Image 1 (cartoon, rainbow, N blue to C red):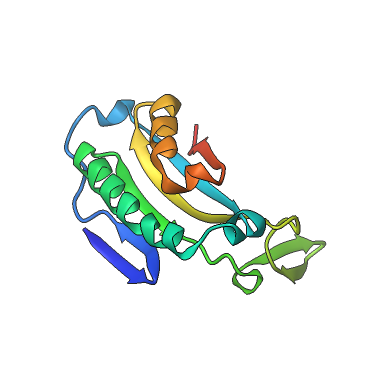
Image 2: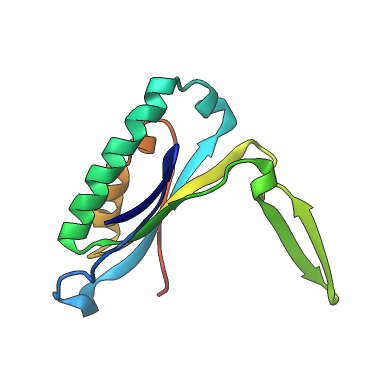
Length: 141
């Protein structure tokens, strides 16, 4: 299990291919972890330190089940995001996240599992689901 840790878990990658099983029946899902500066401001240092262990345990379970593909933490500062648009051959950029509402994507998991119900069960196990929405999206058709 490979990990890069800088204060908080920032990156995990699968170290081995999932066990061979009915691969054609599995679908890929993105769990997009939401956040807001307002919600995060209410969290104390203990809340953040309690974040790493549940992620590590969940990742280990998902790897053993062959459902884990990857997960990453995203930079949540306005300097860590940029909007790029091209119109009539002219590219314009705006620094900051897509929405100015204070809501942002703070991280994601990519899973391979049977259906959206299973992906939703996994999303409910994420530490952040206690204080932030987790959007579950099927990847592809």
